[in-house]
Length: 202
Image 1 (tube, rainbow, N blue to C red):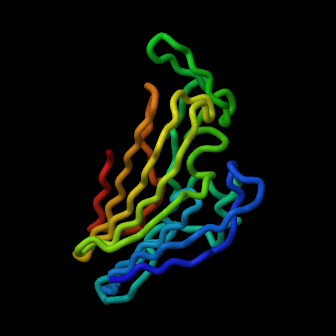
Image 2 (cartoon, rainbow, N blue to C red):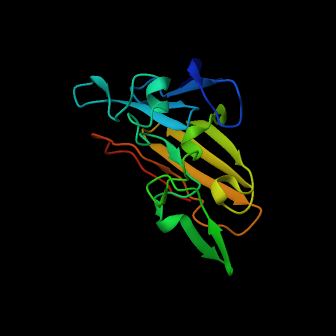
């Protein structure tokens, strides 16, 4: 088992004036199963698996390069970790503990997948290691209080685990400094065939 790390390009991160490097992490069991994650959006880019004849192929949809992932017209959240809130908040507002919070609208009058600069638009910090028979990639992102209208500073973590026995697990955790809504993230990928994959939601 091994982890390979490379730079695949640069992306515009809302926190910085200059484009920042985007890293690719390949978690490879060396038994035919490998997963590739890019730090832009903590995005699952590729999952290689062998078929019944031993031929290895990618079973998730992907785009060719970082520029394509940055282009909203070409990339409707493909493979990305989205947040703070997955799905739509009607009329871009919600009430919590008697307080009305107004969010940025990015789908007509509504707020979808964390707004125009949701989690998928950031380059996440990442670190990979081997833990026993697992290859583990932890991606982390800090979201300040008031980002896109959400209350509380939020620390998000997306963990990809590739097990030697042939399972890919994706785990999400988040902590916040104030009451807020829907901090669970979602990898929006389309698998064509991956029967041994298990998704874990936190």
